[in-house]
Image (cartoon, rainbow, N blue to C red; front, top):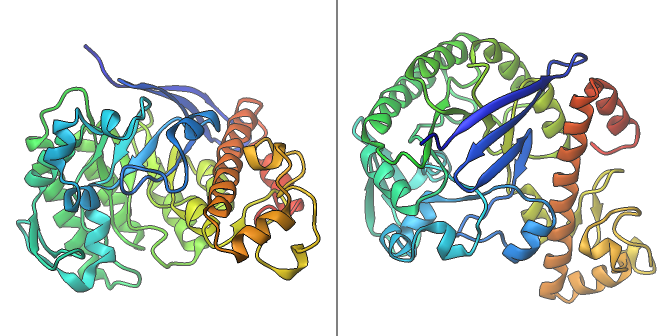
Length: 372
């Protein structure tokens, strides 16, 4: 049985951007797509029902954090992540590779794997490519990411090459250890901010013939033009008929610019994280709803938005009141809005690709202030 297939439907004549479909055991994903992040097997402040209603096609969960608690064996006992978190659409799990980067002060990288010190109780854990595959297969997501090492920014050429080559060796070990046919394994391209290494990594991973490819080590502090440059350099060497996933990227401008450069899948915690601080995304730029300027503003977060908050008359003034009172409803309403905004943006991007006008669409977004 063929569980996974990527179908390239159309390439925008104006930009070269890709319209596609990724078939998985839990549904078809229309690409390019944005994937909400559910670190602890839940997208913060959002019910699974609401996540489906706003148009989410797939969500993420975090392998490292689920290993810490409740443990991958308990999730397997529950019937896997889909049953555990009551989400019947596709799921992607990262590998813990980003935690190698983000928890650099509490881990030790060796050739055979990475030693972590638990953020919960201080115990030591050791992740290897083989153990990560065991964890991800127990979690049972539709898509699992290979274990990788993400070089920080800035990194010198020597360190970046060592991390990239280790990522390649770990990718081979992950592929050898991964046996679950109903789960797609994606390799991850690294190479930092070095053109030659990005191309080398893209070629090396392509030769390994993964079902799909993540692009890691970008959006780690570098200027956005440098990230775009790296994407442009490596894309000609990425397999055309396999999905491309830019990891950890999701601001409105990066979504549009990434798609123009050939990306099919994105994820980011931005939408939910900023919502918990009172910041809303709109077509005219960000709005900090805790600001005093909204105290007497009885308009919705964004006129014409079809999210639950906007279409049901929750005003900026009311939401500001909730934010100031630290009421949970504030996070729920702004999170739903931000996610719906991003998912609708992706739907509009797909429409613009189909109509061969994505560069015109980008210009419209810029003119209305969306990226401010």
